[in-house]
Image (cartoon, rainbow, N blue to C red; front, side):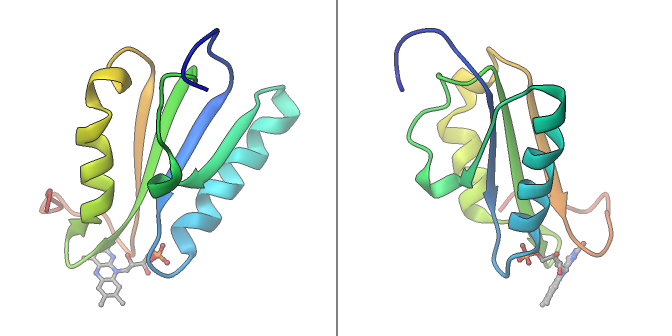
Length: 102
Ligand SMILES: Cc1cc2nc3c(=O)[nH]c(=O)nc-3n(C[C@H](O)[C@H](O)[C@H](O)COP(=O)(O)O)c2cc1C
């Protein structure tokens, strides 16, 4: 999927205990009725974001930090994510301005 027209929305996630994965699956399912094809998968399984129209990344939060592999994913694909609508969601008990990169 590294060449050709872009299609669909990527919902990549890093989830230590499953909740962020459930949120990612829900986001994907919510897109179906409005005709948007979503591909939901662990961030570690995403080799390339270029095939997608939009990139979403979800990360669980532990000890005020996003998952390191989520930050690594964002850095690795930053150049391509900048060329498309891109969103980050964080799953935790609360949001706090202290959340920072690993
Ligand atoms: C040891 C521990 C530390 C946590 N630290 C935070 C935190 O700093 N901020 C936050 O919002 N949630 C925190 N949480 C809550 C988790 O982020 C939350 O349960 C999240 O849904 C876990 O996602 P996951 O199931 O995808 O791993 C913590 C949970 C545990 C068990």
